[in-house]
Length: 171
Figure 1 (spheres, helix red, strand yellow):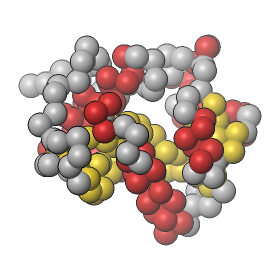
Figure 2 (cartoon, rainbow, N blue to C red):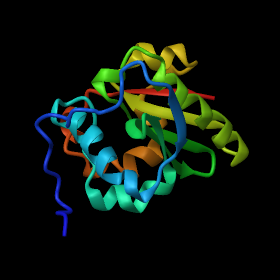
Figure 3 (cartoon, one colour):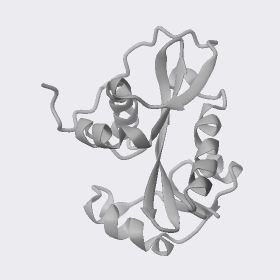
Figure 4 (cartoon, rainbow, N blue to C red):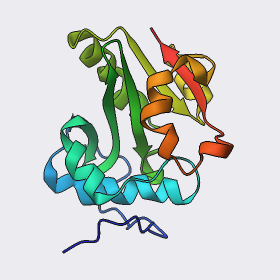
C-alpha cells in the first residue's frame, strides 16, 4: 500500500511523451493521482508550491484537470471552492519538459467558466508566479482580504510564519 506521507521525489521520472506532442486538457481520473503527486511534489521540494499527500490527491481528484500528451499527464491544476463567493486555483504545475508552451494558461482559463457556472464570482491564487497570474487578469491584494483561506489552510501551512506567496484575485 502506498504511503500517505509526503515524500518528495528528487527528480521527476522521464517522460515518454514527445516534447512537440499535441496536448489535451481533460478532467483528472483516479489513475492520474500518482503522476499528480510526482509533479506537484517535485515543485514542492524546490519550495515553489505546497506539497500534497496521496490521500489529499485521491480525496480531491474530482477537482483536478490535467494536461495530457501522448497519454501521459504533463500538467495539472485544481479549482478549490473556499466559500459561497470564492474559489482558489491550486496545485498548478507543468512538467519542466512542457513549460513555455502555454499549458498553464490552457489549464487555468477553463476554471473561470467553471467558477462562473457554479455561481462563484471571485477566483484567487496564492502564488510566486505573479507575472503569469497578472497576464490572466489577476491583481495583487493583501492576504488578509482572503480570511477564509487564512482560517482554512494557512493556519496549518508549514510556511505560515514566513509565507512568501502573493495573494491575487480575479473578479
